[in-house]
Image 1 (cartoon, one colour):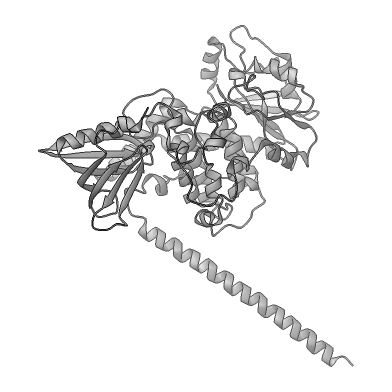
Image 2 (cartoon, rainbow, N blue to C red):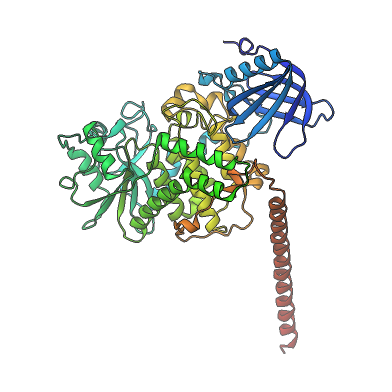
Length: 549
């Protein structure tokens, strides 16, 4: 298919652009295969470049022959285009709708993007499973790399290489895969070097109403326990939902077959409930009535902060089992690709200082989200403004990023990255020139040949000139476990993301710059103090030598 077939009117003059915090701009509107471009006639530097894949919904209005298109973006921006001529306006609107909903992944911009920067590091090879395993192998010899899923035959949503107990062979893993939802057998998510406890993740067991069991599954899970120790199964569904799953062939671990494991049910919402929550939240954020009661009631009705609290509480529970109880943890919901990953990754941010560094956090996203099979293409297909109700869309990854921001706000000196880093990841998960978040699994990414045909996000982010934008000036390495408060009073709306297009951040930006200047000045003074101390010590040494007979 040629993009030209979808572009009915490629160019329109005298279009007026209205967008947040900028004066209206008149210029020429151009449509390309992947971008909507508006270039000002008066000022050549005034340009808007908008990826079609970033467009969530459009509305059309007409007053006489003047048409208005309101574009609602996946990054929550709302912009307005005033277009002279009804026919031009209708043509532009239908073209945008077609170009923003392309069916084929290979027609998306990452396959056409060519970087304008020098590639210092190939991001596709920055966080390989073998490299991650080396970090654990120095501390324990009880685990091994398994290549059982090399052709994605055992589990289509797992990567080719996984970490499993050394005492369990590949034949046993194949049997366990038939007993777990989607073939997602238990694999290592995190090893706690302090006490050797682990977090594992998987899909639900397929016990069904007959109470089916799998000896190999029991052996695999028990292989993670120390002698005389108990473990915890954290099921991210309520007991009622887990019991309902049995009628459909799913289920949960029976106490009789897993006597050394205590099961805990923590209800974390999924799918359309989360999507509706995001829609209601953005309705509240875009409400311009300035009525306090209305704002607070709409914010509460969205239940967004309630979801944040549920996820953080469960992650803290998992971390508590590991660090304070000295017990290993197995986490799963139904598929093990959504709430499971929220819990395992947030628990690591609480427990593991490396996950709070920039590269450590990137490795976490690769390991616990991309390689672990979170279906980004399905979940992030639509954002808060799309009218069509789909089954698979849900802001699972955005909720995770929001939870990270909540912890960052409570521990502002313990993270190497700032909130701009989290916002950047949100934006690229929904619309990007990079191939990192394309596809729903490693299997799909291999079929699409993303490593050969697209650029990795990490290749761009990890250049020094970009890293400086995402580095937290307050960061001081903290090797301790950090325990965030999950009390309702401690959780706040992430204004830097959800309100960034509704009110100017000018004064906050100025305050941030002043803080950076103060920190830099403090470092300069500290360096001078250290220099003067060295000079003083040298003078005292010389005086001592002179006085000695």
